[in-house]
Length: 465
Ligand SMILES: Cc1cc2nc3c(=O)[nH]c(=O)nc-3n(C[C@H](O)[C@H](O)[C@H](O)COP(=O)(O)OP(=O)(O)OC[C@H]3O[C@@H](n4cnc5c(N)ncnc54)[C@H](O)[C@@H]3O)c2cc1C
Image (cartoon, rainbow, N blue to C red; front, side):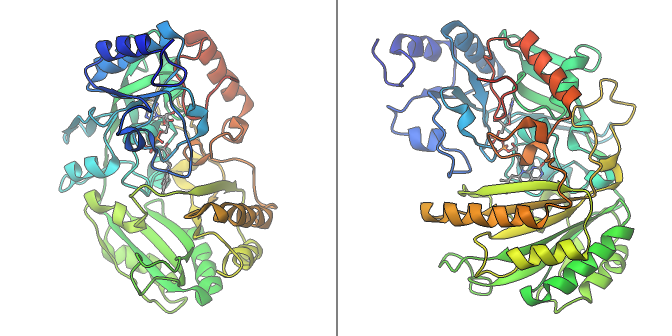
């Protein structure tokens, strides 16, 4: 066997190249680095080949090829959810699946599997409609929806995946088909939050939501105000209407030359918010938080939906990251104090951000009656989520970041339910942290019946390797 890609013989690769219109790359190619590296460059994933699919027919051809040659196929549009669980698989890059179609009157959109939130949302500017975007515009819509999708507007409309109306998929047989609640209720239930292990999705049809307005912004305070600001954040979240979403963070910016001087090497507490309504009403709701400390920067204004990514202002360039998230059954002053103690002092933590997200509202309810098949990402009863991020710019930072995450986990232990939404679950973690026993058993039974030889592999495989 001659090979330019360990694990695949060149004859089989030639057949793959002949079967698809898009580029097929292996470690022998000069472009291999850029082609196979994920957004989270800290994950050393090792696919055997990359296919830059040209269209949905290429996806089907790649799956049929993998089936015939005993390989696995995985779609990775961006790689925010990179894991080594993808090692040995053929990686499909979906950027060319770039369809964006919006029907404003029917409040429906169709998007291809390569479309990022930041590429889609400007199509809604001026329509009075919003879609269920999360904090980061660089994330692919399909990858996010398959994981359930934890949106700014989840308090008003629940998991983003509840808005999944239909999907075009390639199944493990390599057949391209359009699925709906009527044609394949089991698969639709699983696609609404069960991850990418059951089918390669080539496009989706989603709900859009009317909004009375969209206001967003972030208030920044000195880190010394953390106790007062978090106290006010907690108080405001207790009475917040569903249209208001509050996320508050402790931020420690590293002392590196590429950061602007006002933030470089400094620490802050921030409260980022969106409100589906007027600026006046948003300001009224935010006033007690604004009054809790010294506002260094406090712009809250109308935002076009196309620019909602600026509210959280997260990095969009490839970034090495180690993150961790946990749902909390409650939050009180004692927990806030413990969190500030372990993560509020930059000399004591290697984390760059520790964020509290207020949930509740429609998150605590299941999908509405329009979704006959239901959703495996059903509801979140916990009212808060804590999420933390470390950026290991050098390998020596990995240990300290893990140590800081362990301290954080200990700080929230009394309120931690052990549960995490799938999009925020680190690779290799137990799916029992996401799904209840019955849902996980149903997902696994579906995988075993539809794809027993695991031709399709998501970043959280349902069956043991
Ligand atoms: C800075 C940052 C902020 C984030 N904020 C949020 C947030 O606010 N809310 C939230 O819910 N999540 C959030 N996430 C998590 C993010 O939604 C997930 O990482 C998600 O997997 C999508 O990222 P991606 O497009 O890079 O997917 P990738 O990492 O490229 O893919 C992840 C997995 O999705 C599946 N998948 C993707 N496309 C397909 C497809 N076409 N067919 C079948 N399976 C597919 C595969 O299993 C794949 O391994 C955030 C992540 C980061 C790094």
